[in-house]
Length: 140
Image (cartoon, rainbow, N blue to C red; front, side):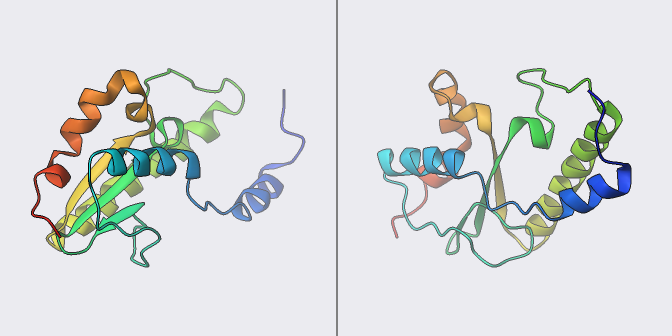
């Protein structure tokens, strides 16, 4: 189905859509933190790059990336309609993710990026491997 708005109108509409974090994935990760005794995190910390969780003492930033929006092809979902727009959107997001990771690492932070699909039970081992730096840190 063709878009009912022209390119400029669609752009104006999309600019008004502001992300406030994907609460369902963040809540799943909070459950994992809780089940594994991981504490000391903060959400919505006002820093450029907007990590989903920060551990200030350890200088660890955790991002939970939506598979579709950030270019993970675990489900191979790519819209056929407006393909060029969505491909460019995902490419911009992936480029931005790399820039944000580099920014944090240049400041001496560790960055942990978790894919949305890794929060599913079948991927628990992979998730726990990524969270290992949080499991092995000193008690707060």
